[in-house]
Amino acid sequence: MRVNQLLKPSAVDTSAFNDLPPRHKEVVNDFYNQVDYDNKDVVKEVEKTIDIVSSKHNVNTDVMYNYIEKETGE
Image (tube, rainbow, N blue to C red; front, side, top):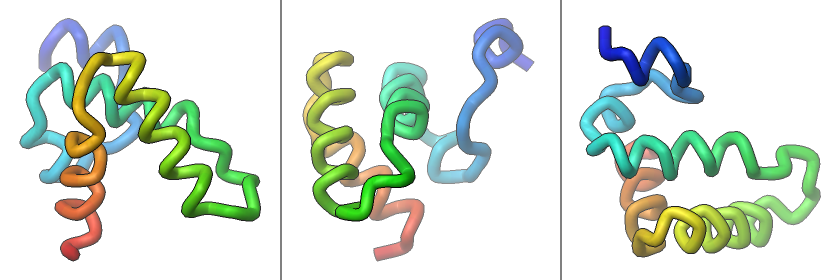
C-alpha cells in the first residue's frame, strides 16, 4: 500500500480507477466529492462538476469523460 493511499482514501476502487495515473485519480476523487447527488438535473450537474474539477486540476475534460466511459463500458 502506498503512503498517499493511507492519507487520502479513494472514492472508488475499480479496475478502471486503479489504471489511472495518480493525477487523474485526484481528478476523479475530487469529482465524486464535489458532485451534488441531490440535483434533479443530473446531466447538467455532472457536466458542470467535470468542468470545475478539470479546470481546478488543469487537465482536459476528456480525462473524466474517458474515465466515465471505461466505468460504464460505453
